[in-house]
Image 1 (cartoon, rainbow, N blue to C red):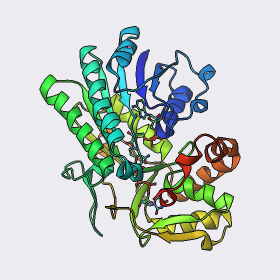
Image 2 (tube, protein in one colour):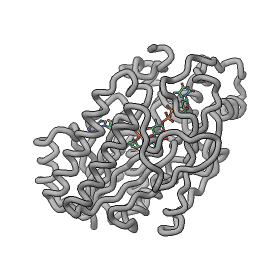
Image 3 (cartoon, protein in one colour):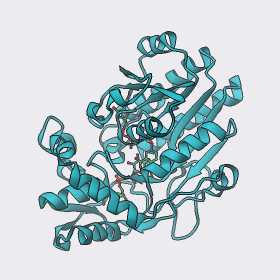
Image 4 (cartoon, protein in one colour):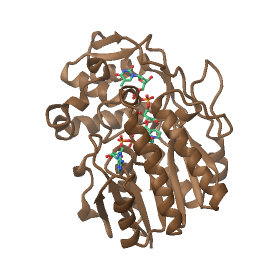
Length: 336
Ligand code: NAD
Ligand code: DAU
């Protein structure tokens, strides 16, 4: 039995990771540390279905509180999902991104080193590589060139993680993944925002000329890649994870509207995001070759699953758009 400390386990990807472990791996006990920001949902995890599950509500940047978690438990693995994750919010308020994504990661690294944990996995993003032109792919050797406060904070954290490997010989691993979509994603991100606005008859804000490209991956595929790296990855290495599904924003919104049988007139072209990265695309041949990882779901099938989840789970998102979190759901365009 291994004990895995997961941070940010009430957010989108962390929730899906914990559910995957609960369903497939009885040999891994989860300790979930989450400060429960607007992006978290305590109802996501049903504790009764999980053996050895523990939850701590705390900020990963708080040394004393996080230190108690390490003192109270024998932790083997740490997987750091906790982050401020939305680019638009980082443009409006960068300070919290520095606090959580950089100081929080440093705190977690220091405690993990002190407690001699077996493995530390940092969940990073393709955005640390910057922006691509029409051609080319990001590889693990692409120089870091973050362009938003969010990606700058993630790149800083990646460098701190790598510094703990070189300086202290700490057993660290890093994954960098492309844009995730799927169940439990907070509706500030493009795909759930499009689905929910379409279902509620609200306009869908499309930034700039709508031709920015993202490489989409279904969240369950990302989660499997994370577990592969945690169990089989080489220390000190970075592993790209991608979906092999590049698409322009206008095309993905159009596809969703067609699937929902809603009018394209809901699309509203709005002022562009400041510093908007043009294109992301991943070369993830390293994880494929070394760890035999490949995404299993194509974008069309993944979108069908995602749309049907949001249709079946109206309670989940209606609480967000009409409850305490409604001002967080407001699109960045409305907040500008
Ligand atoms: P999310 O915003 O849905 O969830 C983040 C979680 O972290 C929330 O539950 C929140 O409460 C928690 N959190 C925030 N600050 C905290 C703090 N100081 N202490 C403890 N918990 C805190 O994010 P997500 O989309 O699930 O992303 C998870 C990770 O994956 C992030 O590190 C992100 O950078 C990375 N990532 C995301 C994507 C994507 O497309 N969403 C792609 C690649 C990488
Ligand atoms: O690439 C990985 C990253 O993907 C993660 O590291 C981030 O945590 C995650 O938020 C995501 O970042 P993006 O900025 O790419 O995702 P977002 O859903 O915000 O935007 C996707 C694209 O859609 C982007 O080109 C901006 C555009 N967009 C977004 C929103 C919210 C719109 O045109 N309209 C919108 O309302």
